[in-house]
Length: 434
Image (cartoon, rainbow, N blue to C red; front, side):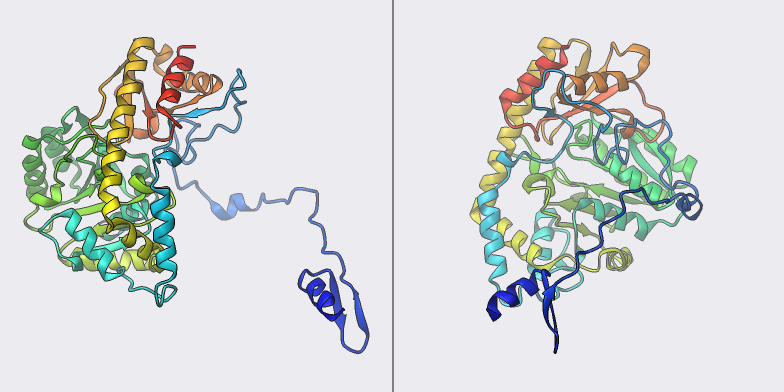
């Protein structure tokens, strides 16, 4: 009897009062069915920090997610195929290896102890080795994913009101981080070979910027790779401007061939490059483990920036990441993932060319994005196309949020990593013909 009463007490169903007995616990008050009056928040919050003027209402916040809550499901009733998410489908994740790594991490002595603020030494050493022989483990700082690394780099190098150069188009998450940091963003156009050096030099001269954010390998969204001849030019231009190059290398593990281009960090002789990387893209959306690599006084600022915003990354997650990437199965996973992504890119490209001649694009050699110019968009706006695609059961990203200034045309971004299969990519192209 006493055990039953104890169980009911733990569930909150009975309450014991010493000297009086045991009674049925009072029911918790139900929340009011009415809507709270939050109008006062308009005054307290003041002006909107993130300026979404000119950006598609389908991105919330612009480019970081893709939702269309006001749209019904596909008219056909079929399941929606997402060509919007840059994360891998569960069939592409190393789930078994992840489960094993998490199990090993949980059984380590001190698994739940506080880790060093900069990250566990062995994981820092692994990131340093993967990045470049020029850097040491002390140069690496563990972060909770790539987005946190971007924000930390911006805060460490720049102050509110400072100018930041970015590629145009570029990753919308970087634009959001820059806006939250109060930076003035200046676009620098990219073409099939990456950022255009002459325009980069001109932008440095006009803006007085002290940093340039770029993605030299498998650029998001265009998939471009910075050509060999431009690599030295970019670093030389930044050196002449006395500026940092913030290199976002989030897609390094997603090469479709045997070799990925070396990072700019590999050519950096004077600590000019701040290097950002992450395990999220090749592993899982929930593997929020990345790194910032920097040399010189800026490294101290980065450590302070990360400590203020994140303190440290959970030790079990760091230990699991280390276990995952130091086993022989890791290199095999990357090879198989790269091959599958390459096949998927070709399948989607062939299906789109056959069915949608109004799209112009190049199939990338790495990454997960296919960037297409819409040559026959009515009124020069991709938003109606995106809405119609959603009604047909396909989610694609509008191009507008990827541009820090006026778009250079009408574009959409389609990814081939989140779809369940190659066949679903062909089906997505078929639906888009509607």
